[in-house]
Length: 343
Image 1 (cartoon, rainbow, N blue to C red):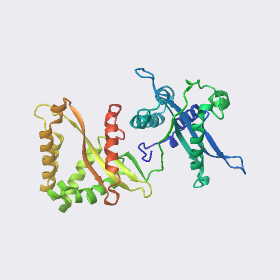
Image 2: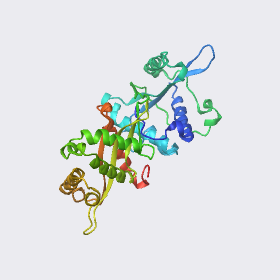
Image 3: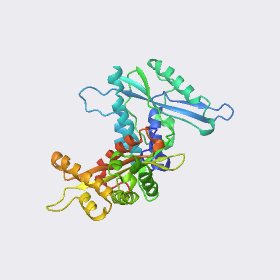
Image 4: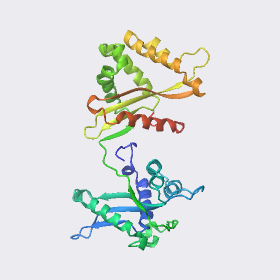
């Protein structure tokens, strides 16, 4: 999970954190989780939580452990988002089919206290976990019960025991990402507009063809178009964590089928607010392409989200930011029925 796709993560949501601790408790009951303890203080300085997973029975409606946990025990949207992300990755990887096995052990979470990092503890825990998993046919090395987890987790219900021995060990490694994606806000709007003016309008082929790159006034008019799109609450930015700078942006515009003789949003914008030939030429091209594609008629819809402008800082291109913004935009659009992310 190298990309932060939620503005407020588990670290900022105490309820989400508690629910993730319950998940750790469930994993611990499998008897394959490990800790590294500092011998001088007796403090736990690193841990790995390993979870046994079984392949669902063919033709059954039985849900996976993660699905059940997300549905029944995740009340926080943040923890549910994280669980859904884990399930999405499991589904995409599909180790059961790929490796032809019916049971695996997932190295689910691994963490080290900051001042004990870079000492090989994570490597040691993973290596030891793999050896334990190989020998699991002889039973867990340290079986636990719900009572062993302490009074805070006495409410937990026993989960269905795994009766098979794991045949493979899996892990989806996470890292501290260099970038984070968040909704465009008042705080990030100036940086997003600066990026558009200095990088997108200067380099994008259509902007060059219509000579927007040579006309600052045309650029200013198109920034107004970006501002209009931002009001829909679906635009996103990628932030460089090291500098806090906006390094990529997508301006998404909601479009509706016009009623009767009404004109489209882009037609109105071109006629009323584009004084420069360059900006008008660009917007008119957008109008022509929309007319030719006619998505409303083609797909039988009356409203859609258009990824209108997508730009990345020159020094941050080739790193997957545009792809990430597009993917996150699609997810945001799917959930728009619940309201915009950041109106």
